Every structure is written in C-alpha cells, then in structure tokens.
Length: 145
Image (cartoon, rainbow, N blue to C red; front, side, top):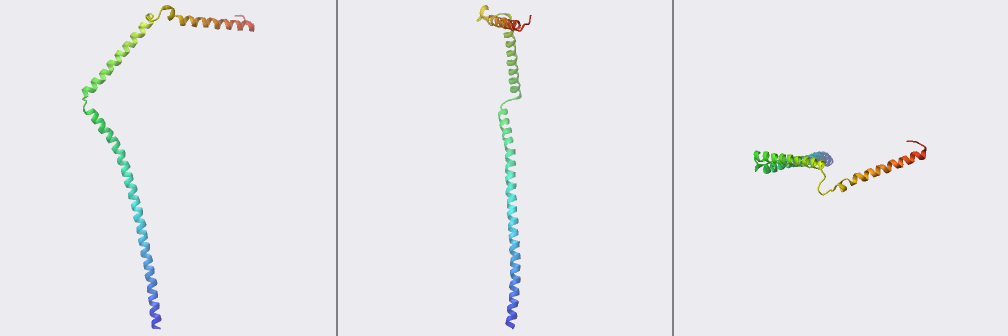
C-alpha cells in the first residue's frame, strides 16, 4: 500500500506540474502574441513616419530649389524683369491700337477698292435675293406687302 500511496502522490504532483506547465505555455503564447502585435504596431508607426517624412521632404526640396534659383538674382534684377515685361505689354498695346486705327482709316496697299469691298457687295446681293424670295412666298400665300 505504501507503494500505491506513493504512486498516487506522484501522479497528483505530475498533474499539478502539467497544469503549471500549461499555465506557463499560455503565458508564453500570450507574451508572443503581444510581442507580435507590438512589432506590427512598430512597423505601422515606422511606415507612417517614413511617409510623413517624405511629405515634408518634397516641399523642402522645392523650397531649396526655389532658393537656389533665386539666390543669383537680386531684388533689383527681379524688379527690372517685371518692368521690362510691363514695357513690352505697353508697346504691344500701343502697336495694336495703332494698327486698328490705320485699318479703319484706309484700305491696305495689298487691297484694291474692288477686292476690299467685293465681300460686302456679295452680302448685299444675298440679302436682296432673300428679300425677293420672301416677297414671292408672301404673294403665293396671298399676303400683300
């Protein structure tokens, strides 16, 4: 019987050790899962950080390029460029106005009187033909003008 009691006692200890082992395995597994979740969060945060860094770097590169392109120019150079553009615009407007004044004042040398007014004569003839057609239609319908 002593042997039987000892074996029962050992069996109880074995069951208790198995329970402790299962508890430790659960703890290890949950720690691994927590570690995996933490690593995934770290990865996501690193990705977000890199994308935000790229968003900041792009405008910074543009600003640096703009500074580089403007570094050789003084404020006076920029003002002179603007004044030159204003002069070109004023000159173009002046030429445009002069051109239209001259067109209305006299026919151009490449245009004789016959050819310049030829299109208006054709338009007048077309208008007369349309009026005659309308008169003919009115007469057919019995309407007296």
